[in-house]
Image: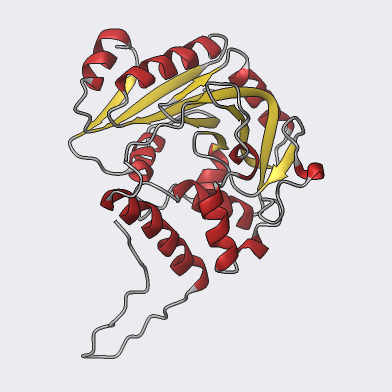
Length: 277
């Protein structure tokens, strides 16, 4: 099979319906499968799927297991050469997937790719290129990690010669709203780190692809529409916990090394791995 498509849903029934319809339309000439993972929605999303898309594979979780774990559940079932992961709040235009597959076929060094994203009003979303919003970009600069992301334009990214909306370019970080991954690359580096419950897992995976020697690309010859819906109200406790907790986890994972200390009769006071949930 050429392609596996994964969409994770949590209470976005109306957006999910149009996201699926757009994928079905753009994949009409492709050998593909689609897997929907529902994280315990209460808005009758499962009923909508059963009534409108009975042919799709659906994983119905009895609790919200997080985006990373939900994606991994679907990845375990995927058989496609490529994995397309799209958010439930997106619309994929009719030629997008065929062009993405062609690009991946022509670039065997690519571990993953993202494409141009537009708002419903037609505004270009700059995180299409660098994969990070301003908060994450500022955080990575503050902790000194930005030096490891030379292709992500964290410094002075609004310079004229860096406004490359329509130019194919290599990047460090792929945006989770739409990313196509090479399944053989995932077999090498592993899947999503499930300690990142809602945010940050795409950043971590993109970085691990680069560490393994793969390239990530931004491809602007097609686009998706991203409604940028959020499941959490900003500055709610859950948002703060998951969003800023993911930043803390990322910093601990790559900048702090806690050694294993094995002394008979004395437990290790601090774990060698971290989890923020």
